[in-house]
Image (cartoon, rainbow, N blue to C red; front, top):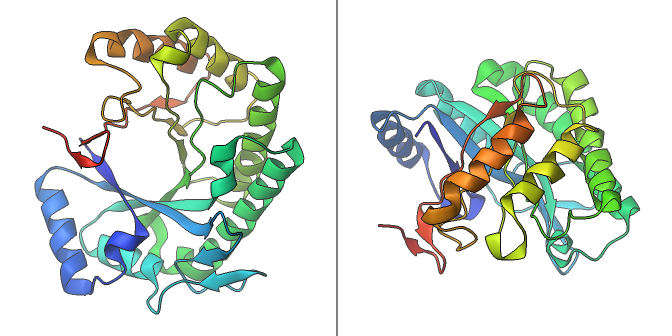
Amino acid sequence: IEGTFIQDYLVASWDDYRWEKEYKALAEAGMKYLILMQTVYTGKNGETTSIYPSTLSGVKTKYAVDIVDNCLRNAKKFGFKVFLGLNFNEKWWDADYAPEWIYEQMQIGNKVAEELVHQYKNQYGETMYGWYWQWEVDNLHTKTQKEQEVLAQALNVNLDYLHQKTPEMPILLSPFMNYKLGSAKEYGQIWTNVFNKTNFKEGDIFAPQDCIGAGGLTLDVLDEWFNALSQAVKTQPGLIYWGNIETFNQFWTTAS
């Protein structure tokens, strides 16, 4: 295990001592990556907030502290590499939107990335290591050719911009799956089709959730599904294949 995710609400009250305590514990466990979840968030009420001082139109800064700076500053002390999440909108979970809406969300993500680079990249260099593409893709709403084309085009809006703006920073995405809603072979083909239309580059990272904690997969079928996805990854030269292991049970208790 080389890294972990962390959410803004957990760390909002942390001072440097608490951040240092966390990084020290993670380092002792052999970790070197930290993924900070979305830095700009739009709730169901339409309100958009940021976890850093943002000047983007319509975005309110959520906290009195700069969580991105706190995260990066303390990560640098311990040699950690941080993936910064871009934007996310809760409407995504409704799966009821026109393609133009998701393309617009990707453009917002590009603006967030531009602002984050301007504010932090010079100061934190390689500590600000990569980007986390926050939008979690599933195997239910990607079955048709049209849905796959929209997904690929949405991804490319961010991929093309981020590769140009920060060619040294890998992009990580973490889809999920439910074995009750399709087959492993089908999902592998879905991602093969998407990869055929997307502009991932060498070093970008595909890290599916193992879905055990959330109940989407069981240990009995885990190898079948991850093998099918590995075959899809092989069709995209240079794409790195990681696993995102869920260390919780479905209703947010700690996994054994």
